[in-house]
Each structure stands twice: as C-alpha cells, then as structure tokens.
Image (cartoon, rainbow, N blue to C red; front, side, top):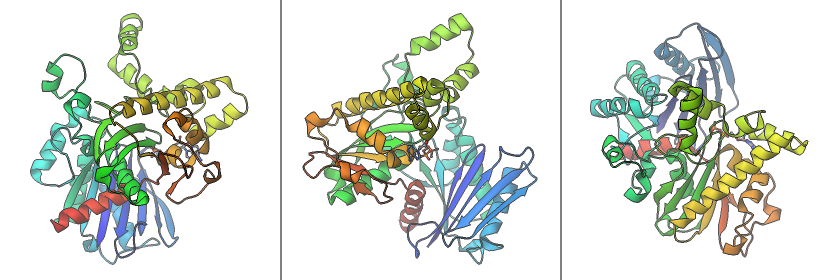
Amino acid sequence: MKILVLNAGSSSHKAALFDFAQGQEPAWRAQLDWTHTAGAVELKAQTADGRSHQDTLATEDKTEGLSWMLDTLVAGPVQTLSALGDIQAVGHRVVHGGREYQASIRVTPAVKDTIRQLFPLAPAHNPANLQGIEAMEAILGEVPQVAVFDTAFHAQMPAAASTFPGPYEWVEQGIQRYGFHGTSHRYVAQRAAELLGRDLADLKLITCHLGNGCSLAAVRDGVSVDTTMGFTPLDGLMMGSRSGSVDPGILIHLMRHDHYTADDLDTLLNKQSGIKGISGISNDLRQVLEAANAGNDRAQLAIAMFVHVLRRHMGAMLGNLGGLDALVFTAGIGENSADLWRAACAGWEFMGLHLDPAKLQRNAADRDIAAADSQVRVLVIHTQEEWAIAQDCVQILAD
Ligand code: ADP
C-alpha cells in the first residue's frame, strides 16, 4: 500500500510517501519552501535509499509547486514510483477540526465545507490545509483523501477541562479549549503502551510534546482528559518563540497604555516571546543551552523558566489524572535533551519517580530511561506524526 502524506502550510509544504511493504521509514520525502526566494519555490527531496535532489521553480502558484514536487516521485534523481496513479490515498494534516471531528475522516465536499467554516479558528493553518487538499484533487484526480486533525485526540476532553471560565456565551461561540499536537500525543501514547507491554485503556500518562511548539496531554485510559494548549496553540507551556500562558491582564494593559493592536499582540506573543524573547538569542534551545553554559544570564533565565513552567503544568496535568504510570517525552527537545529530562524529573522523587543516569546518553531508539525501581516509567519516544497519518488512511480505506 502506498500512501502520500501532506502537511500543507502557508509558507511550506512537507510531503512523505510511505510504502507499507517497506515499513515505517518514508520511501521518499520532500519539502517546498516558499519564503526563501521571492517569486520562486525551493524544493528539497530525498529517498530512504540515500538519493537526494534540490531545485528551484519560478512560481507563486501553490498547486503548480505541488505538482512539480510530485513529478519528482515519478522521474529524475529521486524517482520512487512508476506512476502517480500508484498512490492509493493521500493523508492530510489539518490543524483544526473544531467540535465536529473526534477522529480522522475521509474527505468529502461536506468535510471540506467544515474545514472552511473553521477558518476563523485557525486562520494561519486551515486555509493552507484546504488548499493542499484541493491541489491534490486537481493533480491526482479521484484518489481517496483523508483529513487527520491536530485537535481530534483532545475532542473527548470533559467539559470541565475544555470550557474556559469566561462568560457562558463563549460555550455557544465555540470559544473553548481545543488542544493541538493531537496526532503526536495519540501516537506516543499508543507507542508507550506497546513499550510498556500494557493496554492503553488501562494507563495513566502525561505526554510531553516539546519541540518549537510545546504541549502536554493528560491521557487516561487512552483518552486525552486535559491538555495545555487551548483555543489556539499559544496557551500553556513556554515555547520557542511563543509565550504560552500569560496573565491576560497584561494584554489589556498593553492595549490601553501602549496602543497595541491585535496584530501587534499576535506578533509579540507568537514570534517575539518564549525562549527567544527572554534569551534574546534564539528560539532554538540548543543555542540557548550553549549560551547558558557560557554564562549568559538571560539564556540561563530562559532555561530556568522553561523548566519551571514545564513542571508547573506537569503538576496541573497530574491533578486530574489520579495517578501516573509513565511520563513520555517526545519532539525535538523531548527526544534529545538529557539536561531537560533531568531538570523536568527533578522534584518528583516523592512520587517514586527516578531516572537511571546510565540510560541518559544519546540513543535513537524509543526507550525507558527510568531506574529499575522507579514507580513511574519515563519514556523517550520519537514522534511519528506522518506515519500515524498514513496508518489512519489505511484504516479508513479498509472500513
Ligand atoms: P518543530 O516543533 O518545529 O517540529 P522540533 O520538534 O524539531 O520542532 O524541535 C525543535 C527544537 O528541538 C529546537 O528548540 C531544538 O533546539 C530542539 N532540539 C533538537 N535537538 C536537541 C538537542 N540535542 N538538545 C536540546 N534541544 C534540541
């Protein structure tokens, strides 16, 4: 079975082709970058067997760029298929599924309408996601397409977790906690159950997706019962360049006294805050860790804050889980930083959580880094969102 997965953004497109006969590693992957060269798009593609290709095309038309990218699947240095007709389904990452979707779904005209109706809730993402779906229809014709929503895994949160304590009208207006990174939280929760040799329906987990964007989920019996991201992906943890939760009174103050507009606040909180805003160095944790080790005060503060806020929210997730079988770390920071594992886990020893110092060295495998006698397991799992999307396609086609 050959499945194409597309993550269509406003400034980039990432695609991967999975051949289920060959396993979990994509046979081909490609990326389009629309920001680097004015009036042109840049392509990078590579195959699992080590071939690669780079090129530039003078166009601003997204469908034309995507068609050109897919041409590399069937001709040239990274050719992987004999014909585009060999693709049996396309899985799309769609950021917002609103209250409508609790699971992945085959794309129909009605599903496209709903994704369109949700534009106001995800103006930076859903329009680009829908454009990707329509481009694939134009290029590949009748092939089945599946929408996999970032919000879906959190859609069963109890109302007490998803409702914001504003006026009740917010409930009617759809202003509520939706949560994001759902495909990653769902995948690592399932993988955690596999690693532990336990049934997911019988586990209490905190999954920590720590990349440029960061969020936690409290997963009880396979269901997300709480998460740190909210109405938008801006809530919760301190992130690369996003603030996470701040006192909303600060925003009122900035509007009243410094005449900030909605766009100003958007830029400030999404692009100029978090690790980047505090350190003044970068949104990339590796560079900030380096500066902190070299004695930079602001870098040290940024890292201390990142850890403090992470532990604060871990505690908040714990409050509604009623126990903890495993803590799961994933994404760029969560999969790689031993400093972060040590810092995040310090302070939870009273719950019987202990790391094994001998297990903290670099290792690409999904693994348990807790000490043998730890009462809470600590798992490091490589998130595989694209693979999870491809698997959803196979499942939906089989139904
Ligand atoms: P995205 O959310 O954009 O997919 P990633 O999941 O790739 O991002 O995570 C990017 C973050 O992971 C960056 O802050 C980067 O510094 C961090 N990261 C990657 N490798 C390491 C490492 N070895 N140690 C610390 N941080 C790391």
